Structure formats: structure tokens, C-alpha cells
Length: 486
Ligand SMILES: [Ca+2]
Ligand SMILES: [Ca+2]
Image 1 (cartoon, rainbow, N blue to C red):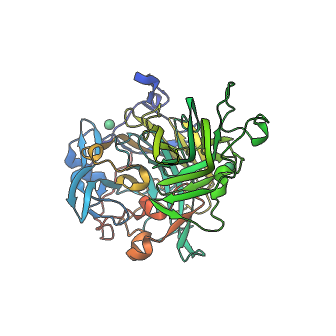
Image 2 (cartoon, rainbow, N blue to C red):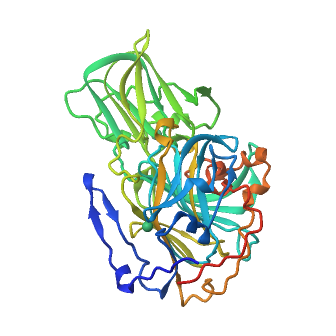
Image 3 (tube, helix red, strand yellow):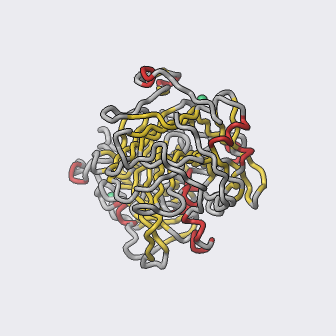
């Protein structure tokens, strides 16, 4: 039985910030928001021997087809008071990498869920703290709440999935509902203006990026001028009348993962339609080739990227990297590039941060370091769920770099769950869940599962969701082992 860790209540009311190198703050403790009669019902700070992890947690032991790694108990290591989920470059379970994924034996309905962790320092890792309703739906729909599927170095992803209702879209793809938001804590690449000291002469320009999503609102190409250039996000009618934008309406070729794509209603033209509020986005490696028609003397190239979140009036999900090339009529030459993530001012693998969800019958409210960052109406999450801590490897999480992934780890300081003692419908001491049952995605044959795509989501498809990260043995009956409430 797990040792209960009880702190004086007063301690939980203290929020301590440490200022570390680079001006990054690391939150030591957060706290449930005030106004409810919170009771701490689960607390694991991993301050015990590795073997004891199995008292309260179940580990995946097997492959997951939708990601690039199989996941095993050996990759979940408790040491020095923390849990490490470790990525390894090793062939196992039919895949090239291994990692770790665990979930609580205990399930919870409603409450305040909090986890303090660091991302693994690897670009294509998915660092997840999440809930998924397993087994029979007692009320509402099968759901998945991704409190955070974090991507190195500074990306936060929140998603709510409905795994009960599916439909087939016009392309024959099976879809399900998913809504959320993602954003990067750094915004240096959103408004990129590349002014050249010496003009270059070119008839074409080419922009390539591995960012996912790759959202491009507008590309502008200007001649050399003596004044400063306008901001890349300004409206077309705000440009000086005598400043020609060579990019406006220029023919485009679009390549995804190296293949040229075409099609009506593709939205390519939004890349250079003059309107910074319209955009084109891709979930594959994107290359945009723009034909300027003839050789032009170019003094500045501007790239404006990012998804506008109208509810807060901010752009998010900007490009994380690019290579910009020009064609002088004979050959291509690189004139500017940014390495993936090098613009970041915040590295969520360097410092611990607190990710949290407040879940009740009406709302899902998400927090980062004690501050609300997003909220959604709760329309179908009414059943109990275990808490998951998962590390996965997937191409949608950034460029695949073997050297950085081997040995990288997501480090978890603690997980806490509070519940509102005044909310009679929450599960406090009376819920008896016999097993972690099969997840919904397991019922899909592999070929169907791969086709399922989300809608209304900043992520491209369900294979990117931890929902499909089901353990091979997840459907097996689990031994009853109920965590003692604190
Ligand atoms: Ca546009
Ligand atoms: Ca700890």
C-alpha cells in the first residue's frame, strides 16, 4: 500500500516561483482554484522504490501501431523521488524505439487534476498528462481529455476527443470530434521579416519547413527600399502605395513531404492573397515555391505564420523552422534559415511546470502554472477515468532526430487529484472500478484506425492522439487494487 503523503493544508496555498537561468520560472506548487470544498484524494510524488510504482499504476507492455515506439514497464523508472518515462532507440515490439506509458488503477470522475513535469528533450516526443474514459460509458460519451500533450521545446497541446461518435467524410475517411488548442510559449517566428543588406536577384523563391502544423498566413516579397519595411502582419491596404509586393498573386507550387500537390479548393492562394488573416496549413513537411515571373531585385522577404485564436485575439502555432531559398534562373541558393525550435525562449524540458485540469459537470478548465489558459464546455465527459502519464514518439511532434531521443525522458515530480466534497456526483470513496478496460481505438482494425481523423482540431488525426496508445494487455482483467484515499 502506498504511503500517504500528507502536507499541512497551508503549504498547498503557497505558490513558489523560482527564477532560473534564462528567466524561466519553475512552479513548485500550484493549487486548485478557490471556491470549492477541495479534498486531496490522490497524491503520488514518486518518493519510493521503483518497484512500488506498481502499487498505484498499471504500465503498458507492448506496441502501439499509431506511434513509432512500443512501451514497457522497464521504461518507467522511479528514482530520486521522481518518475522518468524514458525513450530508447532499440528494436522491440516490432518498432524502432521504446518508451513508457502508465495509468492509475484508480479512476476519478470530476476534480482538479494536477501534474508537475518536464518534457523529454527530444523534438518528436509527445509528453502527455491525460484522461481517457475506459470501459463501459456510464454517462455521456467515451472521451479523452488531453490536459497536455506537450512537444519539446515549448508547445502545449490541449484536446478533447469524442470517441463515441464517428462519421465518414467526403474523402471516405472515418472522423471523430475533437476540439482543443495548441500553442508555443515563444512567438519569435510568427512575424518573420528577412531584410537583406544587399538585394538578391531571383525569379523564384522557395520556403520549406518541417513545422507541424505549418500555417502560413502570408508571404510578401519586396524590393530594396530606404525606409523600414511594414510589419508582416499588416493589412494589404496599410502597405505604402509605392511599395510593390512581388509575391501578391504569384503562381505557387506546393509540395507536401516532397510530393507536389494540387486541387481545387486547396486554399494555396491564401499564402499570397494579400490578406494576413487568411492562411494555408499543412500537417506534412511543406514546401512553397513561388514564381515571380521574371528576375526581380529583392530587398526583403516576409513570412507571417500562425493560427488566429479569435477568442483571445492572439496568433498561435507559428512556424518553428524554415529554409528560404532563391532561384536566380540557374540554381537554388539558401539565403536564410532557422533551425527547429531555436527561436524558443522557453524550454519545457529544462524546468518543471504544473499542468492542470479542473473538470466538473459543466466545464473543462485548463491551467498552466496555476493560470487558466483554456476552457471548454463539458458536453459529454461524465464517466470516471484513470489518469495517464505517457511518453510517445510521433512524427507530428517535430523532426525525428535519433541522437536526441535515445535516453531522453519525461520527468514527473508528482500527480495530485482533488475532488469537491460538495459535488455529490463526483467519485470520492465509493467508486469501485474492476479493471482498466479496452480503449475505444483498439476496436478499430489497423487499416481503419489509421484513417480516423479528427476535425476542428489543431492536430491532424487520431493517430496523433494518445487515445490510440493502448497497451497490448490493456484489455486483460486487472487485479483489484484500490488506492487508499488520502
Ligand atoms: Ca493570406
Ligand atoms: Ca517527486
